[in-house]
Each structure stands twice: as structure tokens, then as C-alpha cells.
Figure: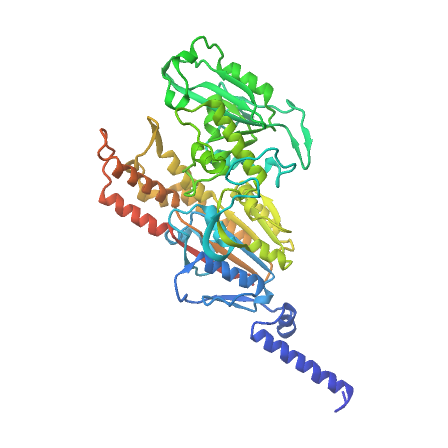
Length: 577
């Protein structure tokens, strides 16, 4: 352009615009296009972890995620996101059960993580006994205060109990609350087994509910095959615990089936205090377990929803396989997490305002109570009755900014997290979570989330298997557990190696300028809970006629060591180049 001509003026304006863009980029205030205009199509974001000024907590990780996603809040002082607006996608993986000590102990086996994610920074878990659901809540609840509250649901469905008539339509269909096959295995439900290429009953005497038994009623948004609540009572026989009474009620709490059952073996103890069964009640009873099974197979479709409290015990006593179950111990989880469970009596008092089981268990009363608790949850919404942190969901914040989320998780977690325009992708295992996250990476979602649970499930199962039921009480043989060796168990090593491969494949599938965040959450909290419970029971019962083993200083040191280890997690941050 000629000096002083129109072309020169345009050139000066362009230089001024570029200078302003460069300044905005240097200040971290530029938009994505500014960076490409200044640095070219090869512009890259990066992340640098600094030395934290204080011990990091999960809320610090959450604030860093919120800043990376939206640019709001003050930039975190422990991590620097260079060219943050270029980070078009944030992928977050929560690794439950993996703590700092376990990571460092098996670091050589975590080759893909080491090669791709660099050095982690230590982050504290919520506490040493926290359940994974609490860790997820801590990451997704942007706090508006430190107080907690118990969600009592919509008006008319509060802690005073279920109000009839019921609303016309629940927030989610009842099937939403059924437990997955993975949760069934975790809670020791009777499950079919593969044998010679086909699904079969696990052992002789078991039966399975069948399709096409009931004609469904078309409801608004769902097909109703019937909702039934069940309660079974057992007595002690020469062959252990056997069924002696069953009661089935429908959604109106009307009794559909109620029978006393003659066990196959002679009764040694009627356990009247717990079962409500007496010798007089059992005189002349001829109904057998096989008779009960045939009656249930005529009443229940495989798609009928069966409700119970610790339903796995009822199904085992009935020798019945049923795939569509709602368990009130899962609907209303204990605040300490598995293996702890709320009692039916406690739930009835808290949420129904009713005292039950005053003298003995009454089968129909327990079945009706279980049904009302399930309906209360169904018509109040998935968060009813749970202790929630005050705050706003991270997903809701992103939804208001028109930023989409893809949430790949177990159905129970999706009930709490999914909202607005977020994409909820249900999975029932780590393998499913891995494969479905890979598909979601190509979606327009700004945030992609999943968690791996296999390690935590292994720890929970190990603890559960160490608990034996004796005379109605739970005793834990810690001395036989080889507590200090759990981290080297071959199954733990196998899970860790598989976890490393999954994380590496997710990272390798990312497009450039994607931020990858791996949070390890909490460690072996199941072991800590078990040790704490055992310490309490042993110290409380030392003066009993048959006292348990003494709680020793060595066991106390083990407890303290496991507590410290369980609450030390890690966070990795890396931008795909």
C-alpha cells in the first residue's frame, strides 16, 4: 500500500487488533480464536503444577476444574493453565481405591500413567472412611457454605411419611431405582451362572422368574408390570437358617400372598424375637418351599419390581432369581457407606414417623414398611433422604453456560449428577465405563466424566468376606486377614495393571488441547471402617462372659497407618499435545 493510502490505514488497524489480542492472550483473557490468530493453527495449551501453598483438598481440585472449564473464579495458585481457552475438552477420571502409597508402591506397573501424566500432587480425601459417593459429591458440588442438610423432597413427601393419593407421575420411573447386576453381585444377591455356554441357576433348588407372566399397564412414561414388596422370616433348623414365613404386598400395601412355610429340616430354634414365629403357629403347616416358589412364579413377571430390605437374604431363603429389584438399604445408604446398612426400624422411624418391630418382627408390617419407603423415594426423587452438601451442582453451572457434559457412570451415581442437557451414559463395570468414555471423547461435550470402581469393590468384597455371622452378631477375625498384605494381593496388582491400560488408552484417544485429570479419591476405606468397628466392639465387650480377643497396640498402630494412607490421594493433570 502507498504510504498514507487506504491500505496503510487497514494495516495499522490490523496491527492494533493483533496487539490487543496478544495482550489479552498474555493476560489469559483471550478467547480461543485469539490464540490461533497469534500463535497459528499449531497453538497449544499446557499445564504446570506448582508447589501448593497448603495441603490440597478435593474442593481445590474442583475449583481448578471450574476455572479450566469456564475461566471464572480466581486462577488456582497450585496449577497454571497456559493458554487455557484452547482447552476445548476436560476429561476427568476418578480412580476409587487408589491412594498415594498404593500408587508409589506399584509405580513400576503404572507405565502408561507415568509416561503420559507426569508427576502428581497429593490431595486429601474427605476422610479415611468415606464412601466413593461422597468423593463424587465433593467434586461435583460447588459449595455455598460448610453446612449439610438432609433432603426431604417435595412438599407432602417429607419425613412424616407417604401421603396418599400418590402424585400422578414420579420424577423418574420406578425402574430408575432398580439395582444393577454389578450392585447385585456386590451385595451378594443370588445370580445366574454361565455353564456350558448358557445361563443357569446357581445350584439345585433355585428357580427364576419368567417373562410374559403379567400384562403391563401403560403409565405415563413407563410400563407397569407391578411393584411388590416382600419380607421373609426364617427359623434355625438342623441345616441352618430356613424359610418359615413369606409375605408379599402390592403397591397399595394390600397383602397379595402370605404363607407359613414348613422347612425341610426340623426346627431347632424359632428365633421368635426376630422372626415372630412360634411353635404353635407352625402346627399343621404343610406348605413347602417348592409350593411358595410356584406361587411366586405365577405372581411375578421377570419385569415386575420386587422391593425388599436387604433383599438378597429373602431371595436366598426363597432360592429365587429375580433381575428387577429395589433394595431399601441401597435407596437409603448408611452414612458410613458399605458394608454398613440402615435398619428397617431406623428408616421407618426417620422417614415414616412410625415405630415398628416393638416386640418382634411381623412379616406383613415389615413388607408394608418396605413398600412405603420405596414409594417415598420414587415419588420424592433420587436425592430424597440423603445428607447433601449445600451448594450448586457443577453440572448445573456448566448447563447454564450452555456447556455440555457427558457423564459415564453407574446408574446410582447418574441419578444424582445428571441434569439439564447433560448426557447420561450408564455403565455397570470398569470395562463398560472405559469403552463408553472412548466414544464420548468425540462428542461436543466440554466435560467428560467417569470413575473406575473395581479396586474399591475388591476392597469392599474382601472386608465382607472376612465378616462371619455368629449367633446374630458380626465378628471379624482380623488376625486371619493379613491386613498388612492387602496391597500386594495378586488381584490388586491385576486391577492396577488393567487400570493403567485403560487410563493410557483414554489419554491416547484425546484430541490435542484436551485437559486430562486423574483423581485417585480415597484409598482402602473399607478396611479402615472394618478396623474401627472391630476396635469398638472388642473394647466394649471385654467384660462379657465370652470376651472377644484383646485389641492390641499392634492393631491400633495398623489402624492409624491405614487411616493415614486411606486419606492421602493424588491428582494428575496433563494437556494432550
